Amino acid sequence: MSAITLRRLLAAVGLLIGLLALTACGEDESGDSKSSKDPATPASQAPGTDSTDGPAGAPSTDTVDSSLPLNENAPAAMAPPLWAFPIALDGWEWSTRDQNGLNQLERSGGEVLFTSYQLTERDTDGHADASDSKAWLEKYVNEMRDNPRVVDVGVPAYSTAEVDSDRGTVEFVRQDVTYETSEGTTYKSRFLARSLGPNLLAVQYAAPVAEWSEEEWEELTGTGLMVTLGA
Image 1 (cartoon, rainbow, N blue to C red):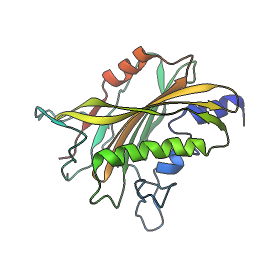
Image 2 (cartoon, rainbow, N blue to C red):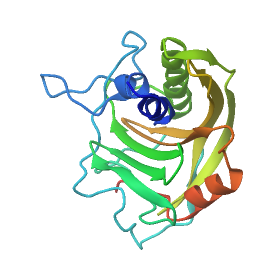
Image 3 (spheres, helix red, strand yellow):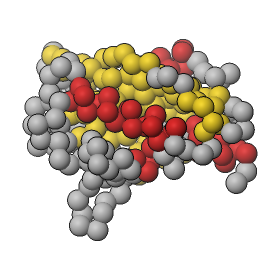
């Protein structure tokens, strides 16, 4: 494996052999998805939402001024929530688009990635959105610690952030963590994640610390990124 392939593997949304194994957008033979919230399945899988509607679809214009805080579980919806994802940004190109609930932008000439997930899970009855959101992020960190190509993982810092939606705002759990690869490169990852009943939405910005930019994060999350809640 080349050095550049390894760097992209480790900087990409959740270490393709880690987080994507944890929440890989596939289905088991029965057609059911395993919940990443099930503590008995640390390498669970969850299928992505149908990409026909697409996370880049236009949000509804029928908006309601409201908010969905973390301490309030999402109401049941007929359709899964979707990301309205930035379609075009200068200096960025698509590396993955509408593939099993995954979308990814890669900054030209660097090892910087911005990725969105929209996943479905099962066995979520009786769960709290807030604890499930954080549990999903903690599994990401644990998967990195078990990855032989990662030699050190920092202590993750948790906070919250609000994301605009077609019905007001939705509160997400934010996770900031650094990790060092066996090549000696240290990356910083920032995740926003929110369980919405049986659905999970997340975005990640990952970059070598030397290329990390708070301004870039603000641009990526402030230029077209929006949640479309299921009706």
